[in-house]
Amino acid sequence: MSTNCFTQPKFELNQTVSFIGGIGKIKDCQLEINEWTYTVEMIMNSEPDFGRIGTETTIVLEESDIRGVVV
Picture 1: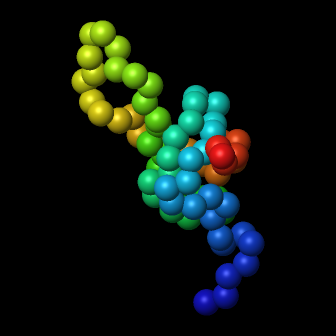
Picture 2 (picture 1 turned 120 degrees about the horizontal axis):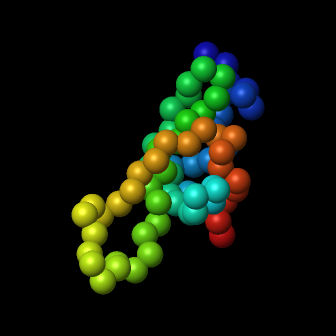
């Protein structure tokens, strides 16, 4: 199987990226129809006074929704 720039993901696992909703760390990626989708775990701020229900918020983004890498 040959690879080209269209079959390689633009972002890597555990890379911190920015998007419209904030920043997060890439936990998984999968090639969908002509575009990569990424499972991104959002970085949490400090815990609010009323606590949290869960520990993380994970979202699925298309490659075009990710703005870039956070250094």
